[in-house]
Length: 79
Image (cartoon, rainbow, N blue to C red; front, side, top):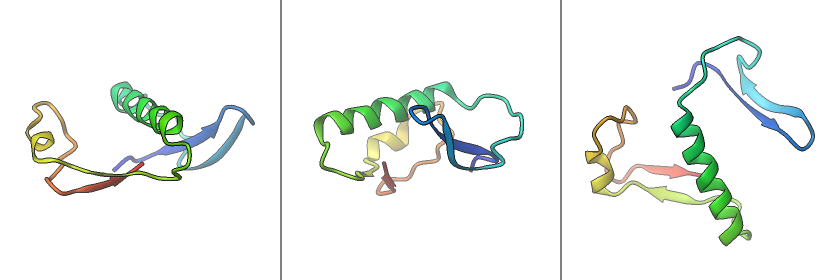
């Protein structure tokens, strides 16, 4: 649902891909970005052989107050 986004490789200092990446925007939710980073690094550390991980949303995650993710039980997300 993001209007603009980009993926940047800090090792090579290259913009890999994105949408409207050169447009100046307010920073996105830092909590969401840190959640992704921690999840990504955790999977890299403990499951280095995996190239992707499917996460299925359990019922209790749909009850979290204060989120705009509009998650539904059974939704599938890939990391």
